[in-house]
Image (cartoon, rainbow, N blue to C red; front, side, top):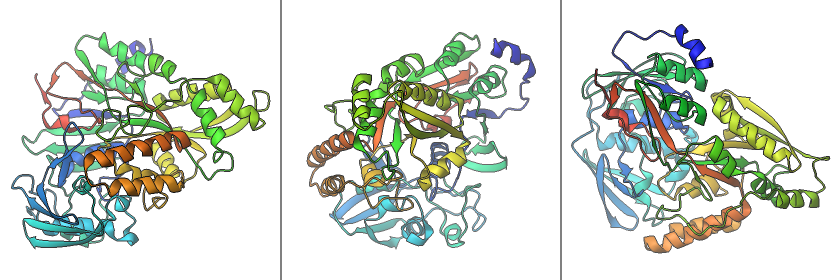
Length: 490
């Protein structure tokens, strides 16, 4: 009824730009600093990387091919395509060279620059340019996974050396060039192959986002809608909805230094109290899968034999009772989430489920920038977020190693477990993939047992579009690469 009542207030936009509706606004278009999902996905369009991944999460050449000259010496050779920078105010029509690669990675490696990506490449000891097409990386220890770490977009060396950040503009060599960011909630890009204009419009409210799609104010949206709105869209003439399973990992995170949440029994009680099956059935998409670990079980380093914390409110009450808590004398916890209505809805359901076992949740929602800033700074007891685009198991060092507390990494909950540190380091020293995979499976068992995160699910992906929009495909990690091929048929 709300959709029907508001349709008449929307007016179709007149020009030929393809408009993409975003549930969360990007924070930074600088690949040296971007970590949120929206920023990362747009940066994939704007910047090329040395390395990418295939559908099996194995590294493949993007800008460059490589060879291991020794276990600690890798040589990368730039390919011909994808090397033309756009929007360079420092050198017009500059072609990407190994000097740009070195400048980008040297910047990230300097601790004073506080790049959140530094931890993932900290094993690089030296970078040497051989010629404009060839560059050598020297490591301080062998790591067969190393090529998969070089996934950061390359900036022109002159831009890096200027000392500026490029949060609200781009100088990349990707499939899209940056036009402008004229106001909060609107970014305009141009596809370089045919000059098609794209507008990325932040519409935080899910219902309003659907309204704008139905009346032509946006042409395409992806994910972050409650199930009933997706079902509604599937019934509308002139529009289509396409689904696929995904690999993005949604979880509840804890501040493990908090006086309450550092207690193992509290985190375990929370895990047992959440009815994931119910949430997936009634709120999430039909292709959403329950998760037991950050990596999906079908990943080469995944662990399909993990024993999940299934819904068991009796066990949750028992654990809390031993600590002196019950429904009449509840444990109080603050739970932070973003102001996205879909995320608030899920958090509200979890709030109710926890209340039923004796945990009183103070639910607080914030605009994305404030929320994400609080999480990075450790200003939380409990929160929920998703990891997107995870391909390489080096993520475990970045997220769980005791040395990876921000800004050195993304150990936002200040988790400190010497056994986990040892397993991460052991896996990195593995001689072959099978050996490393076995250690990573043990690591994931330890993480599930100690619960720095409560794994929730791997969210399904879907897109909804006007029937005139064709050629868009969904990626398993939810990236926006399908925009390279999307077009309007009428």
